[in-house]
Length: 362
Image (tube, rainbow, N blue to C red):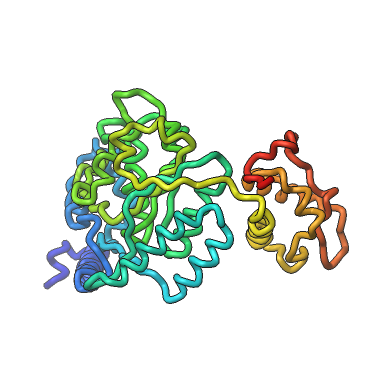
């Protein structure tokens, strides 16, 4: 008799059973998420499903946007990450690796300690912070390392190339190429609600004042307001209040005061010459690990090669070493162990009497 409801079509019958089964599984997952104290509701998935199921054929932009959500299995809840048991040791290691970023890392360490006193789930959270300093001193790199340490999703927005607010808050579906902004994207695609957004080179933002690239930050940087952040493409409230923001800038005077006042400012100085060896060695070790060549190359850079790099900034050293390692590999074909030599280095054409990137104590 049940098959009669589907005009005797076995396919429709089994499709209906599958749909009911999937809906029941989704409800069960949603119930589990609601009862989990270390998760928070970010998206109203039921509302998004309702929107999807009632779209007209002409609303192609919104249909494309909703396809990026896995609405049939996503509960809309995301994890609030706390600190790991090894965090204290790990953050101390980072202070050794980034000696010029010690104040920022202590800032992170302090708020990590504060999280341990929260009632309920002890999620990691810190207020918006602005890292200022010259280019190439490790501002963006150290934030990425912190995100790895906290095991949260991290995304960088390069404000030097941003010309409108669409990057943060999305564009309306009345446009043919509408899309969500990076706030929705990081929360949709990541597993954590307290992910990190790097607002890189925020002092270099440009574009038309009618589409202020920084406009969304007035909402996003205020926790209470961010609880109901509206992305123009979705046009429904999204809870973005747990995101953590780190901005970087070379010249803070170029940042609008109303935006700048929402950040805690920390200055990142160039690396002092006494820390040159530690920083250079750290960059080298990271490169070997990234390239998966740790077993072939000598783990330490010899003193002569280190000395040749003393006039270069950390950013320059990263590029110089990338090429030097490749050059060393070419001259050492067939050898089991490769040691970098000064001859492998192609240095930036610089006035070595006035080195950039390190502070020299005379």
